[in-house]
Length: 153
Image (cartoon, rainbow, N blue to C red; front, side, top):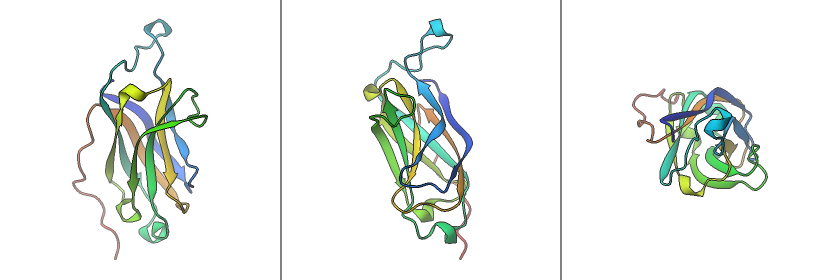
């Protein structure tokens, strides 16, 4: 796998429901050099989907929800909705949904199908407001949270 493979660049996830939505970029793992692209991975082992939250609604707005789930999905179709396999997921509670927060979703690369991408969905109750996030694949997990905004009292 390449060092960083972009899935979303400050993508907005507005009023996220339990159905969820796919990241801006979904990658075809079967592209070849002949098509002008070097194959992304033939590897087995572990990869990480790293998430950085850039902007989130006020805690008072999202406090009534159960939080978000960040998934790594793989599928034979690019929409990642036909018969997707969820090969990694992290559930984030509302009090951890803060601007600057970082999360890593580990996944095994040997179970991947043709397409791979990220998926963001509400755990149960829709998250009202817009969350902006940077999401990418990497060989290593993202650095732990050092300094993030504090939740207002």
